Length: 250
Image (tube, rainbow, N blue to C red):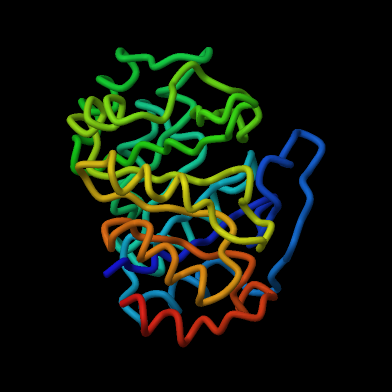
């Protein structure tokens, strides 16, 4: 059965939910801004023993907030956003179970093997999650995107890529950027691909609006793809009850 992986998205030091693909230096389209601090959500997830959740730093000014969340549940959460070989070990020391990496590894539109190897040297495969968040091009193919999901790389979502990168990562995180934050349904086609392509644990994010969407994730992903839910949850201003989903996804 697929498991819920909770999230704490940080923007300008606050817990927020934004619309995927809208984040720029000037801001982002925002669905929700919480009056709770990051540690509150980390402690909530800890009470349900929802391990492997994601603390995502959306731009600068979020380090202190991320550290507060990690301190509230050492080892229970992963952290992403601006992770490099130079700072990855520091985030593990700060309490992250794993670090999530995109732009440092997929730079200038291509996979940088030397950067990936440097990360492996710094924290080891067991502490590394590769973020293969993607957007669909006009021809229908999905490609990994970086730099706040604004830049396409030349890395196509296909089975050979997942098999190759699995040797250097303990799991994958994949946001379906085209539906992320829109609460308009999940990308079933991408889910089918993830279930077929990934030989290691894989987490899907994007578009969940109801329990029907969660069931679709379980069906399309064959129970092999975990999921994260953001804007749809009542703790983030939505209608989907976190308590019910947390118990289901434990």
